[in-house]
Length: 530
Picture 1 (cartoon, rainbow, N blue to C red):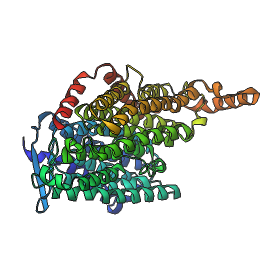
Picture 2 (cartoon, rainbow, N blue to C red; picture 1 turned 45 degrees about the vertical axis):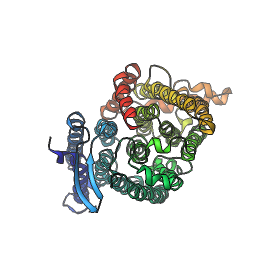
Picture 3 (cartoon, helix red, strand yellow; picture 1 turned 90 degrees about the vertical axis):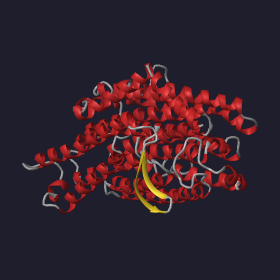
Picture 4 (cartoon, rainbow, N blue to C red; picture 1 turned 60 degrees about the horizontal axis):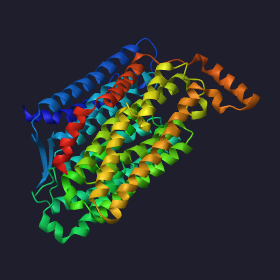
């Protein structure tokens, strides 16, 4: 295999998006690309835009899938050298294949959904230019061969997604994008400290990812507490995008962005990149053996548990549908970090399994919310009464995603939550003192979160299917009848939005019924890295 192909999934969408951005701003077709659909020429421009964006996305996903199947373990290519041992290099190991597989599967379907959702919006060319570039940047994170490359693309991810959050150009979008930018810049500063110290104490003289970590045992032993502090700071730095409490406050306001953006922010691109970076930092840079049993492990484990409790509680209180799903993301992303904090093979396997399954559950939930908003304009939970029977496909897919998020058996979410609880009890039996108590306490935290998840997800379904449950008395019945009349015009969207939902639903059920091959693959990664 030509190793230069390892750079294609990152560079192809980046340059493709830059070309589209130039065409949308400066080319003779710029005005048509910025106008909403309408007029005799616009449909032709929209079809051309769709073919361009979906074509690059599909081609990139095919290249990624081919690399996943054909690339040799540890095969790498250096793109360029910044200075000394600061190299930008791509490598596709088993860990990278997990994240690359997620994005290569989800992105083409997300683009298909986004074109229908954004059909009547202005500035489509600019929107899809950044959508493409975000794909390339996220692929660069998945393919990063060292911490330097990961940090570079982590910074680029902020630059490519900031315009997407700002896209509605409203006052709320401006506030949300500024908050996202401030938090991301602050997090990047702490993450940079991790990069500096990993390079300074590296046993191999660079920041390349190696299973088990790369710290020099002798040098690290002399400055152990300093390195533990740096790890915690870098954890919270990367944790800004992984929405660890109290670094989560940018995420709920970011739901002001169009649903195709928020779905990728919450399911794939941003939050999963933050979680993936923490897994890399923990198991492939510092090393689980160096961190296991230390106060740093206690701090990150406690932070993950607090975030789970906070996110699930706030989701119950939130009446806005997309913000409720945002708080659900805050909670569920820390499931991944909780598994990671076990510093064990079982913990890493559990973290990776939830990273995979949560991507499908959450993007499906957001796309269902977006379908309702697109068809009816309804954005709050109390406005959904009676819509379940008017939009059967949408709410049928939401039902599967909701039950899976709760952790009901026969759905994928049950498998990953089982893995996390199992890893917590194994950690508790293998550790001593406060860390052991935290590990056993994690089981209670997960049970509480499951209960809260049932409340905030199933409430939506009950309102949609049985609206009169929440109505009392004559006035309530009149209001329910009025809502039912309002819902008469509602229907499922067209195939471009429905097809992704059906595919995600099939994956959630498929993994719930048969996930053993994937679990074996993830267990092998955990055994090697921890």
